[in-house]
Length: 269
Image (cartoon, rainbow, N blue to C red; front, side, top):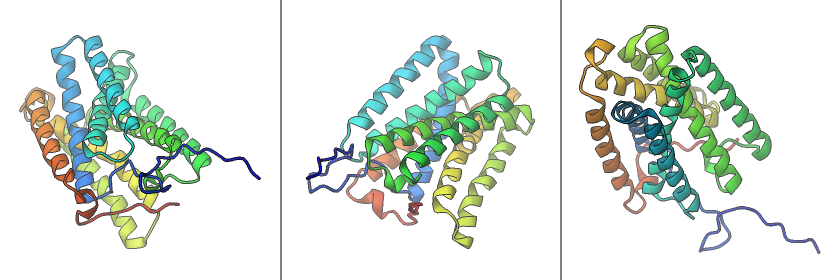
């Protein structure tokens, strides 16, 4: 008789099937994701100018810690908990990428390449351990750790990449936003026309949402002399926060997160 093997899965009250803790990949998923990327950028900038840098980072880090604790403690998917965690990752990921550039004087090109390498290593370790990178297969504690590590690095990478195109390459915020909008659409077009790798298309689009949302948020929030419209980072953060709350409230109604038209479910590889 073989000894029982204990797996770190999320037990369901209706049986042994693991419970999903992530949302369905729908149109609204991508809308909220883009809104959080923009809010993360403007909120980080706002806090950095309103508070001492160390205090701003401490607040961002504390908020992220609380959000992740709530997410890991949850036994099933809760829209408010999940999107709160994503929003805090967006804010703190921006702070980390900006701190590396400002405090350590690391060029955006170098930090972008560095974050890309780190992300590649996480993907490699994840796939070697679990044999899949599909978010539809996030049903163990270990896979959840891999997922959130990946998400955190994608936000830092996207922040550095957006700043690199806007500042280092001199494209400005609006042109950078248009560039990343085109790049964001490419994975979906390639997947739908050729039936390519859905998991790869998902993660490529996921990475690109960060510089896409952040570039347009910067364009709207930054002062005119910095290449923006001049609305103000605080005002843009507030508007984006209200939009996020509205969409998450909609998803909180029963079954809405899985019935939204246009759902795209990455297949396990």
